[in-house]
Length: 198
Length: 198
DNA sequence: GACGCAATACAGACCTGTATGTATGGTATC
DNA sequence: GATACCATACATACAGGTCTGTATTGCGTC
Image (cartoon, rainbow over all chains, first blue to last red; front, side, top):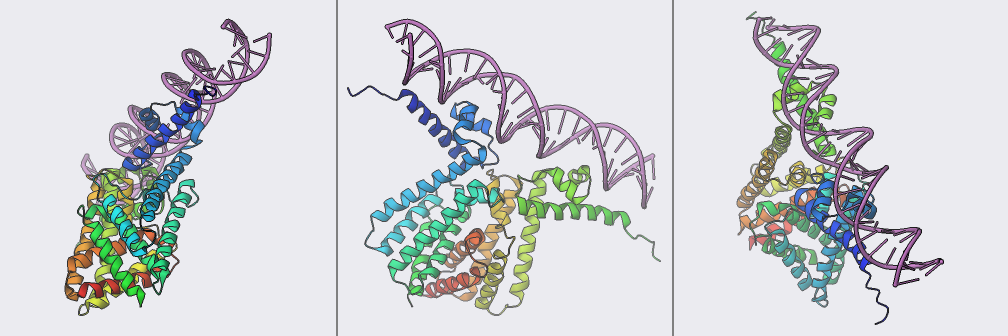
């Protein structure tokens, strides 16, 4: 036995933080950030309010952490999918539109968290807004990379148009039937790619 | 003189209501609905709080009235533009994308009010949510009418894709340069129309 | 006198953030 | 090994402010 560290307290330390963030993510996404008070987060997470404030400083910082986590989850999925189509940009884009379309069709889908938080907080210097803006820029950058690999004539333009489609899917989920989004997105993307070739 | 009505009080009555709604629209849109209390609306409008509650019942109803007004304004512009291209659906769509692109590029643009309110209020039976959902359905219906007039092969599909583009433009404004949206929208729409012809 | 208006105060709930007290478990010193 | 110390946890109460919505009072106008 190499020093029975066991880190029981350290584990608890990280566990508490993780539990708070987990709970906050669920509540913030499902109910909206402004509708959820820290008391509710604390109660649902089963932690002390002091723990929340020790780990996250302010509610605004907790909101930023929420968006950071969503951002990481999103790009995690993106990269996992991208890894399966490293040699075929068209297939990769199709695969992305597939899982994005599936995601926005889920029953409890309530829009893109980044967009929702941006709608709730007008102050552009809010810590969470910075995360949201970076997320959207990242999206456009990654689409530009795919467009470049596709060898189209105007990759920047195509990336901008694909951004419109995807962000549009995020907010239009409520008026689409489940399963409607993916084919709509894919066929639109194909048309835009074709047009961007000439 | 046929009875000097002059409607001084009626005028005042309607005036008070109009001033409240006007003020609420500005504040709700610029700061977000949940961030603005009725006290602030009352103060900025220069009216009594009792007047606000007499005319609108609850804050939720005032929010719904806000969205109704935005809805009417939006379709007012839409119809004014549509009237200039009654005989040419392609030109009409181009004109719509023109003013929409211009609108989302304005300095104080903060997204589509309907989408923003939907992000702030998760309850789908909220009076304002009903207005928002109806607005988005209306949008898709009007686009379907244009698509039908264009004589494309799949007007429903095209309408859905154009909805994605337009809603995407509403929420993507923050990452676009002013003047970038209109050409992006127009060229994308042209590509989708061409693809939808076959 | 009836009504709409403004102004103010209030009720009751909620909010964020802090302060206080107590339990627990790891760690260093005796 | 036992004991003191420290960090973190939970629980609770509180401060100070804001929220929605109502009640009260007084003024001007029909």
